[in-house]
Length: 487
Image (cartoon, rainbow, N blue to C red):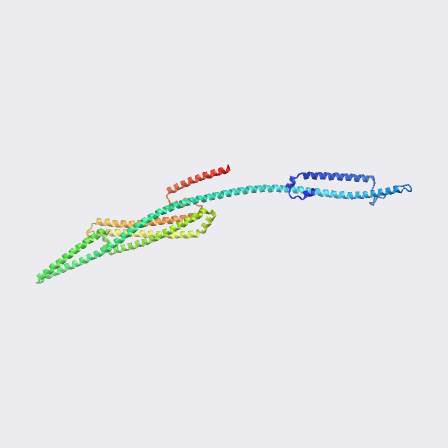
């Protein structure tokens, strides 16, 4: 049992079996009693007879009567037995000393084992405390991580909901803006048709006016010829033939005057249809109108380019919708990786947006230049009206000419306003796309900051109120679920 206790590895099993310690104590007591009894027996034997000096007892035989060999043999046998017993006693003394040494060693080992058991018990207690503390820490960390992950997932869900709502509002606004753009395109086409019709009328009027000038020059030449003939009649004798020629010339002049009157009527009709007649009398004004028409053609091309850009924006919006659908089914980490991969594409798109903004700025400058040219034309036309208000061909009042010019300038300004509105719509769409890309890059940001400059603040406040009410309802539902779990 002592050896079995020595070879035990753990202390807990020893503590669970305290009877072994009691058995050890009983063994010690029994060993001590046995040793004490052996010592008493040895002392008793030593006191009876003294040991020999050389280890062998030299005994003298007593005097036996002659012939009593039996007693003597018995006596010798007893002596031999005594010698054997003394040898056994010596061997027992040696064994007792060995046992005493073993007992001392056993006591030392028991003391060492006790110390080791105490040390191990302390270590076990310390390890148990550390183990319990680590368990508590791990459980707390797991709970905190789970709570953080749940909070992040909820935040991502709310961000997705906000992004979807904002995207729907933007899509609705884009549809409205597209409708407005279509209406403006129809108006622009109608105005372009009017401009072409007016240009054709201007060309016809210019031809008619040239014919009128030619007839006036011919009339002046005929008048000069008549004056020459009159001067010749004073000196000529053949007055009758000359008078006939004069009468024929007068008839021709009357016919020419009638033809001129008809032309003047046609010119007046053209003037009634025409917006402004004084600009056509100067070649400079005609050239300026031609340059304006060329600029309008350029603007038409630019509007076509803007249409293509709006189509590209629609494609980009569809791609953004697909990306949102992908983000709904994936985790935040995968979405972040995709966003990091798309950073380069976003930078390229932002550069494209900046270039388009620069183009819009150039278009605005050109429009300002056109406005300046229009103001200069207004000033020059007013000066011409003041100087040539009473023409020889068609005597229109300056008030009518002012009204016609105001109509023409109003149509031109409507064209400019339509183009400006269209460019503003395209800018709005580009800015919205750019802000959407920025919001896609920074998923942790606030969506209201992104659309703060684009939307009406009242709309933003209403949307925030709706989101807050929805969040409150969902939080109440989450609280109810947690209470049920606790119950």
